[in-house]
Image (cartoon, rainbow, N blue to C red; front, side, top):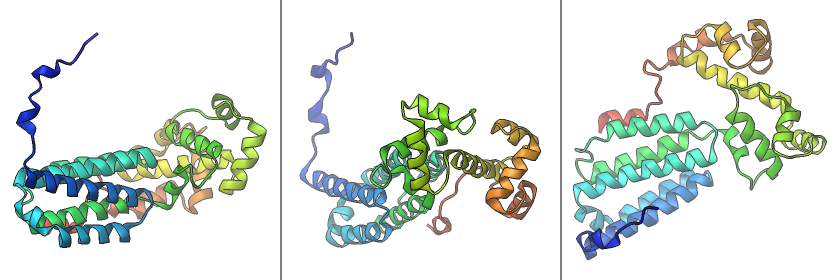
Length: 266
C-alpha cells in the first residue's frame, strides 16, 4: 500500500497572502453560486451574480495576477462541465465545449480584467445554452427515482439492444409497476422513449458525420433502413435524408461545439 509522505509536501510554499486569499475565496463563492444556479436552470440569476461580484470586488480582481485570472476561467469551465456530466444527458456537447474553451483560453488570456469579465460572462452563457428541455428529466427532484433510473439507463445505452422488460430486470424494478409509472410521468411508454432518444441521437450522426443511413440504422439497432426511416418520421415529421439536407448549413466542419460569436471579438 502506498502512503503519502506529508513531510515532503511543502505547504508553506503555497501559503496564501491576504490579497490572494481574499480573491480566491471570493471567486470560489462565485463559482459555488454559478453552479448552484446552473443546476437550478437560473441563467438570469447567474448573470446577476457575476455582475454583483465585479461591482463588489473589482479591487480584488484588479489586484489578482494574470495567472490567477486565467486559472479562474479554466476552473469555472471545468466546474460547468462536471456539473453538466452529472446532471445532463448530452455529455458529448459538454465535453466538446470544454475542449473548445481549453484550446481558446491560451496562457495569454485574459489580457486584462475587462476581458476577464467578458470571457466569464461568455462561459456562463455558452454552458447555460447547452441545457435543453429534455435535460429536466435528469433530476430526481422532478421525477420519481425509478423513472430517472430508466431514462438514465436508456441514454447511456442507445447503441445497445434494449427491451423495456430487460431494463426493469437489470435495475431490479417491477416491470408492470415501473411501466405504468413511466407512462404517467413521461407521457409515453418506455419503448417510445427509447425510440425517441435513438432518433434524437441519429440526428447528431446525420449532422456531424457522412455515415450512410444504413450504417446509422445498424449502429442504433434498427432492423434496417426502412425501419429507421419509419421511426424517424414518427418523431420528426420528415425523413433522415431530408433532415440532413435541410440542416446541411448547420453542420460543423470539425464536429465540435463552438462557443459564442462574441468570443471572436475578444
